Image (tube, rainbow, N blue to C red; front, side):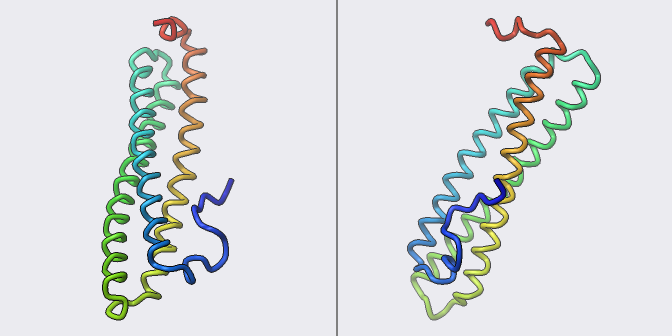
Length: 149
């Protein structure tokens, strides 16, 4: 579960053509847009149950997880901004390949991919925590009636 990369292993980034890197970057952008919506849903889920919680340990756990999800949302927006810049940089390289440093760009591409991979790993961990915590809160607070609406 440690590798969330969207590309083949090895020297793919160093050896592939610009168009394939552009498509890969657009794929990252699409994934991040999905994660942005997913994070909004998870945050709303926590907010919905937060108002019914009476036990202090549950309040603290939900509050902390909510803050973590907000942090993920900020990171997601930052990554989307970096991808936008990256796509622009890539378009410039494709238009004028001899005016730009291809090696520097490929290194930047790898670093962006590593940041996205870490982000995805964190979001997946937080998603699991949200569902585990929601189940715990429903059980410990006896909120089954909320599910029967």
